Length: 237
Image (cartoon, rainbow, N blue to C red; front, side, top):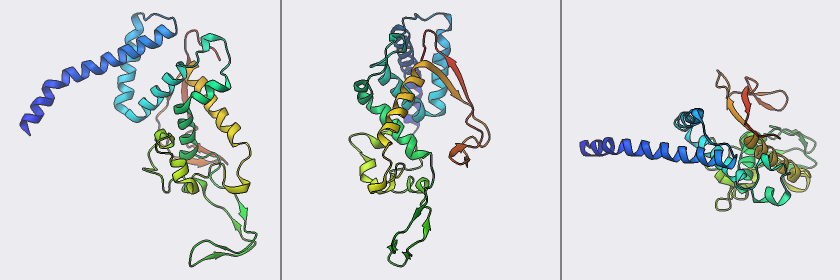
């Protein structure tokens, strides 16, 4: 045990140096792509990245991955629109959009009327004519791997949890009456994420109850979702 601690202590400076070097190269890559060479304030985003990484590693890497993917296809300085083909290729950004819809579905419940007696379980049958309010929010946290964790990779081509747990992914409904505009809505959300992460730097305000949910009538954070935005130099929608 003592030997392990001693080994870790001896390697710690190298690990920290490697992490800082990685973040430095990442920031340099970003500035080069934006045609904006780093100046005296170059160290600020690096410190900010380290703090964000230590505070919430999963969210940090999800954000970085989405930004890198979008930057490989499109830049706001190009003065060109994001094409449908580019949108299709933003596979990780699409998994982020799908996880957003699972983790916090806009409509938490949608009323239905039973048109006939429906055997819900072996011991209970919903009588014909009953108004039923299925909870899409609760369904989104059943079946999925670590459902309380925001994990876009659950929707990648390897895990495909939207298919494995199809009966629980009900954001757009299911069956013959599912939302006819779901593909438009998902593409719209992917496009928003792509442009938002490319044009703005943003920081979510952490306040008491910021992760609590209220229904007004759609699902919203209790504190109103306060976010600080700053436009990046040279970036425009």
